[in-house]
Amino acid sequence: MKIYLGADHNGFAMKNQLRDSLRKLGYDVEDEGDEQLNLEDDFPQFASKVVNALKLSDDSAAKAILICGSGQGMCMAANRYKGIRASLCWDEVEARASRNDDDSNVLCLPARYIDSNRAEAIAKVWLEMAFAGAPRFKRRIRELDEIGG
Image (cartoon, rainbow, N blue to C red; front, top):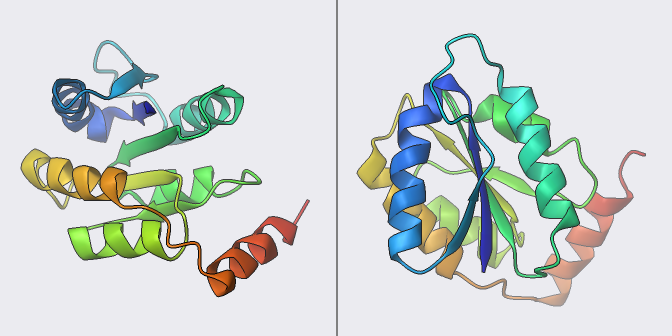
């Protein structure tokens, strides 16, 4: 499974640790973030870069992980794109539910409020959890895709 990863300056260190950890677990990680810390960067540019890479991916199982200070900015930016279901997760319970019920394809993490160990645990659960595919869940996803332009 291909994983696209991006972060602003607030999530830069966490992104690098998570990238290395996911590669050790055998994931094909594409780091779409800065190579060097830039305190002047903005989260929308990385959300856009990662989401566009995900949408263009030839891997139908591909997912993305975005990290910023609160996680909220990345989540709001990612969810502006049709077909993207970004979820902000603070723990493994939320990660499990976002995949099981909502088939989340973008995980957003809050670097200010969790440490890298927690981020790795959340990402691992999120990546391993399958979508349940219940008819009501599929219906809701179709409804989401019909919202907006």
